[in-house]
Length: 167
Image (cartoon, rainbow, N blue to C red; front, top):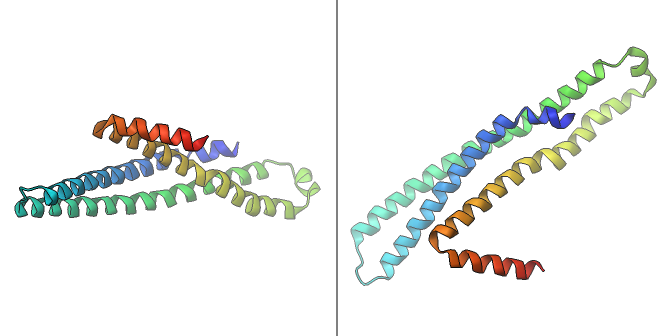
């Protein structure tokens, strides 16, 4: 039931992931421009104008990426707080639905313990991992898509190496 209360904060999670993926997109674009800069410097037909233009583009993309990372971190914190507020309010609502004799039958310290220690365990073991798992999954899928775009042989080699080292 607490999971259901935490799910009410999923819209904030989606907003967080959108900003995090946008930041990742700009980081990838900046990395690709870095590749173009290195290719230009190593080529025989070096162009200072090209170097200047691409450097400015890379600075702009990196700056935009930083802004998106800051916004994503803000919403990540909002997601954690909102999730825990929803979970704690759900617990307290269930607590108030108890009859007085049921409430007094148990030690009051148990309720406070549940509210503090158990909620901390839920936060550390469940809420934090929701965002991390979703972000890592999306990051992996985007990485696979980028590798497919750049060179599918690198992707196949990476998968083979990953499987060999995983076994």
